[in-house]
Length: 386
Ligand SMILES: Nc1nc2c(ncn2[C@@H]2O[C@H](COP(=O)(O)OP(=O)(O)OP(=O)(O)O)[C@@H](O)[C@H]2O)c(=O)[nH]1
Image 1 (cartoon, helix red, strand yellow):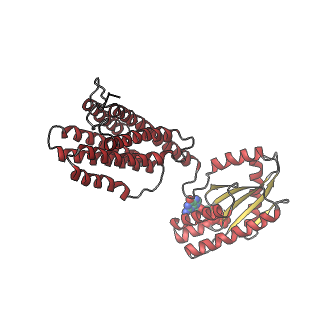
Image 2 (cartoon, rainbow, N blue to C red; image 1 turned 120 degrees about the vertical axis):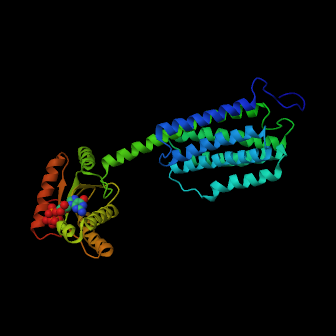
Image 3 (cartoon, helix red, strand yellow; image 1 turned 90 degrees about the vertical axis):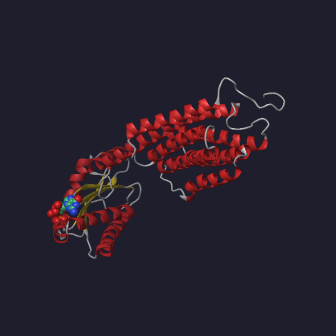
């Protein structure tokens, strides 16, 4: 403490220099992001670029307010800073795919600007209201990031940086309103101002690193999805299904049922109604399979209009019911959505522990062949399935 009633100062540092450092830092990171990911980066990074721009603009205007048009510059400055806090909320929400009310983003900067004009030039009041408002906005962002962060590294990195920032900003607001004799105002080299600006600088760097990590994670997940899912139906593609089914059979102690399923007269649907309708049928078939099967069953698009399913813990009675349900659900779903019914033929085998996937597929395919030749719209089963 700086002695009786005297504000604490940190003479070796001055606030304007630190503000300028934050401004330059924000601009450099904005430039680095623009060069590395572009200004039209998908999702959250674009909002983070807005946040950096808001910080640079806000602090630039606050510095300018010490020289010219204090009311206008300072009001626009606090509005830009509050806007950049909203952009921080938006960044977090976008990376987490969470909705945020739009009003919650644009109202704080607007209201803060109006209140600022009315309170000006009372520095105690303007500093207090500005800091409390912005701290709540940043607190909101940190809550979004930290709530349920689990083991996601980027959420901790960005969330802790935002939380520390929110706490110091809040402390500044409370101190200036409640104890102005020990914390007079924003531009004084008080320890809380100095530590806040240094922390703010660090949190911009940490936030940029954290959200870049989030961007990379999202791109990686998109690639994994692309490599393992069938784009039309959203089911596992053949390669992924084979890998997972092979692993599942390798570790299963009690065997499983393998079902190969092929839509009937699909070429005719394509020829008579067009490929887009054919695609729609495939999508509906994917939805039906996903809807009727358990999360533990493996469902894949084997190719064209052929699907493969690996059903674990499936006793004969349960299989009989499931098979009837699948035929009925596909017919009804296509009838309701497209105006005509589609059915399928299928072959099922029980795979004992130790049998290889390729041998089981060959046996299921033989059963499927039987079903097609027996008139379609039915499932033929090898002994042991039913
Ligand atoms: N629309 C669409 N058609 C596809 C797709 N993949 C494969 N096909 C078509 O599926 C049709 C399969 O025809 P076939 O193998 O003769 O089978 P089918 O007409 O169902 O005859 P059966 O199986 O004997 O009942 C071909 O016309 C393929 O071009 C796809 O992704 N979209």
